[in-house]
Amino acid sequence: MVRYLAPLIIFIALAVLLYVGLGQNPTVVSSPLINKPAPAFTLPQLHDPEASFGPENMRGQVWLFNVWASWCVSCREEHPVLVNLSRMKEVPIYGLNYKDERQDGLRWLKQFGDPYVLSAFDLDGRVGIDFGVYGVPETFVIDKEGVIRHKVIGPVSPSRVQNCLLPMVRALKQDQPVAEEVVKACA
Image (cartoon, rainbow, N blue to C red):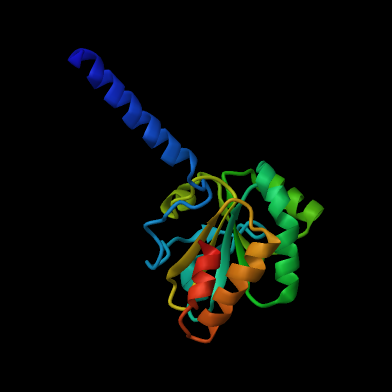
């Protein structure tokens, strides 16, 4: 009887772990980079390979850093939201064209619109890896000091923009703490 009890206990433990895991939101993955300085990098710009871009260029500004690719299906879903957000002119959006061919990225932006002030070109994906990118799209809120304050995994939705990103950006631009209700909306 005892020899059948051990497998039963193991089975129950695995079932509980599976149940808990399936109840988690896959778009909420904690990042060790939250409240830490954004990784330093210098990359060529997508539109101008002779010019470069890095986070040090953004010191003193609150900005969004969106990781995207022309081959990304979810990026196509997110893109109109970013175009609308860029038209609001509340926060500059910088892109990271991730593991893409330059011509494919340029063609994609021409076809669907370009919400970015500029896009850095990360052909080999090293900068994406430094940022802990799980997949595209991902969006980071970076404060005036160059600290990552929030990360969105997956497409940014209109409700996420209104309830999370814009209130957070507004607070950070005014050097105020992010309100608890905003933090909850972002979770």
